[in-house]
Amino acid sequence: MKTIFIVAKHELKTAGRERLSQALLLIFLGMVLISAVIGWAAHSTVMNVYNETLRQTGRHLANPFAGASPLDPVKNSVIYVVLIGALLAIIAGVSSSVRDRRAGVIDILFSRPVKIRDYLAGKLLGIQCWLGFILLAAMTLSWISVWVVTSHKLSLGDTVALLGFFSLAWVFLLPFSALGLIAGAKTRHEANALLIPILFWVIITFIIPQLGTAENPSALLNPVPARVASTGLLFRANRLLLQPLSVTEHFKHVSGVILHLPDTGPSSVLFDLLVLALAAIAGLAALALVNRASLRSPLYE
Amino acid sequence: MSSLAFVIFRKELSDAFRSRLLVALIIGLGFVILLSLVIASVDFHAKVIDYQNYLNALKQAGSGVTAQPPQLFPLQLMRSTIEYLEIIGAVVAIVIGYSLAAKEKNRGTARLLFSRPVRDADVGLGKLMALAVIWLIVLGALSLVIAVSLIAISGSSLAALDWLKLCLAICFAWMYLFMWSALALGLAGYTKQLGTALVVCLILWLCFVLIIPQIGDTMDPDNQVPGGLFKSLQVDKPQEKTVLAHFTGYEAARNLLEETSISKHFERAGFAVTGVKDTYNQKPLAFIWRDRWSDALWLIAGVILAAAIAVVNSGKRSLLGKGAL
View 1 (tube, one colour):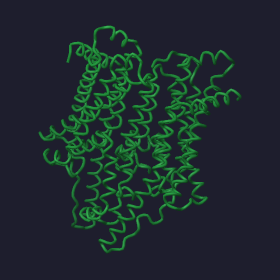
View 2 (tube, rainbow over the protein chains, first blue to last red):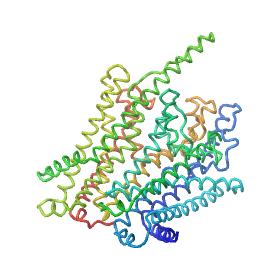
View 3 (cartoon, rainbow over the protein chains, first blue to last red):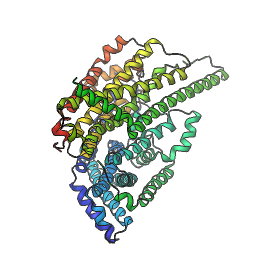
View 4 (cartoon, rainbow over the protein chains, first blue to last red):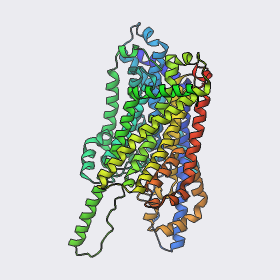
């Protein structure tokens, strides 16, 4: 147990010092910050469009934002977790494995009584602590930015919902960190170590959801889950078979429910949570299968 | 082009098609594109069945109302194809461009190469020429796959104008993918650590391919309400235009943001020539060109800039590891 904490502490220190991690951290926090501004700008424009339509048509129409969640301005953070957060987790995982292999630390480390499982668990714990810190900072920024742009403080219930969303994001990112660590530990080339998990992420985020819904790839960049664009037999069969693998869509659905976004009913939340938990467990199980030999194998750039 | 640049070009070309990783990536890209066409086709047939069912229900109810049947325009099925080239194609392009510089640095062949009387520009030009031909071959093969699939799906051959439009779409794809490859080649030459170049390329890809277009879409007022704002307000197209005329500043800002993404220019040009965007469907090329010439110019500018970056950073100083980062 002591080894795990030592490795995790070292990982946390190194992650904070790396320029690439810092760059991605800045992009992520920057996007979370402007997400609220964009949300607010779009919201006020829609309200103005609504008022202008009422003026021009002279009809009485329902307000499209009546009953909108106070957390609506942060809805884009859902997609930024899927896009930037997942890539951040992958890059953090890959850099962590590759760094030790490249520096030749592995041979020295395993000449001591260090178990490989403790070493990998420490690495994952360190990365997840780093991601946890980033998500906590993102949550604080979101809370403040909603307050600034809407001039209303979030209620305790909404604050708890925001905390719930970022906690869920932390669980969602775990398999991606593990995947990055595994790729960094097992591949012979640094480029492949980055490329393989990114291609895996592309498949999970775009191809699998499209096979079940016929939705276009760009539509999958919406913060709400993909709509079923086609009811054809093939898509129904695909949905049944591939739905559990659409981890990003499950994350988007639960996030939508937590943030009270429109178009996200509470149905199947338990199944979504189960899929996210299973993905995290699968990531941990796959990480446990990494052996010393692969970590000590030569690494090329 | 000097004979040395031509030697480098031939060497890069034969290396590329011997690389198992690159061949696997290209086959994967082809598979995804084929899949996108199959999905679009199955989706269309499902819509036809839905239409028939709807018509039957109307007949049984004794209604004389008829609805417009879904019409198949083969090139319109390419929407996801263009989007996949935009997203996944760019990743493959980055890997191809990166690998051209990475292998010289990794294997130490750069040192050997520059021990000969070779000019810096020869290396860059030879590699760029190889990239241009690699993408020409890959996209040529993909366009054949696309054309055969579209003919099989529509059950008839493509019209001459459709062939021309398909060729134009592939030409835009070539410029877009070549640009990403050249940029990756340049960055891999520039950085001291190759891993840094790859991550920087991926960050650029993330920003220009995914984030900026996503922000543009999010800012679209019509996307703010499920099912579309104007639909929910029961406003027709002409009325929508009148209302939006009061928000030109906001729309201009949104458009300006989207204009900063080269991917968006590729997407707009691709959607216009294939008729994915209804405004351009079945319209002559002159009409499309009048509207979308700026997207083609942006792509050409992107290609020139990326090629310049690649040539500047494929010299002795860069490839021998004296880069800046």
